[in-house]
Length: 357
Image (cartoon, rainbow, N blue to C red; front, side, top):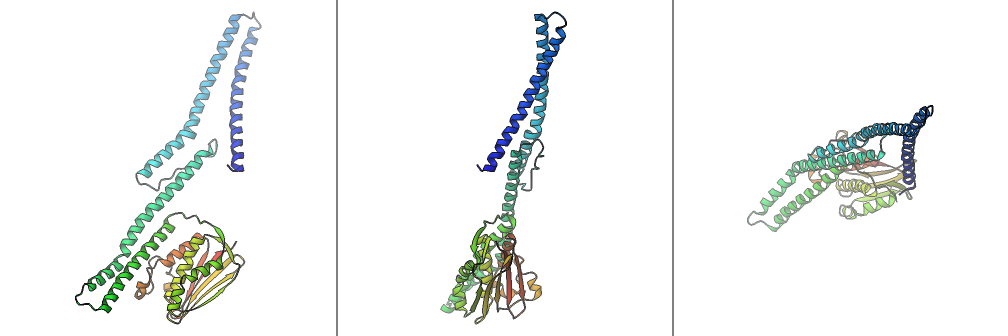
């Protein structure tokens, strides 16, 4: 138990003790005062055993009456501070069982309420929100997959039909088999990206922040694409500042670099140029990824971070329109900024700003 929690527990225990102490003291004081008052009246006459017995009976009845009043008050308190919250939590849980994930429990008033119930209510509401996110993720995933799988499935079906052509030459057979393989790869990549994006959109993601060297991460991500720039005879230039450290979720951030690098090499023609730079500002680390590819118009750039958006339908086979939407969502979660500058035939530059330590 943390020191702060321990101190809070001790103070709460002392608070309960003094409440009970003053309550018991009040009852005993009232009973004693009543007993003495009755006896003082009887002292004016002869003090007999009957007088003492009468005073004791009256005092007992008054103690019983006070006990009844306190019992009623405690019952009311219990209904307001214990049974009420329990009933609302139970009703909300039953609603979730019926499939209503929008239900929320209103927190208790802080006055005269054990804060334990508010902690339970807060956890319950977060659980309901997460369950709602999972349900939305499931429905969105099914809807998106069923819609986006039509094209690659049709391509695979066509190539599969062509493979059944009698007397097919070896060259055509390999070409059609490659088409089926590419369609299957696109479907796998699409489902992976849809699942990641839906999870980021519909569930609360709490970044696991760690301190790391951003330049080292960029270099590690770049090395994964070595075969692509060598096969495409693409010239790679880097200008990565040393010692730029950030505090962020490294796993989420790696999705950003992998998608940006993948697009840069994918849309840069043979013999082209890809440039990656890292500079350190006063409050942000700035990463710029520039390519000499096909570029895009301002109209396309305005929608490039939307799901399933593809500015050039003729190049739809090279992507599924999810990568940049995933990048944008991750950058938003990490509290950063992303922008793009591009022109047709002149390439594109994606700039990402990540808060420094």
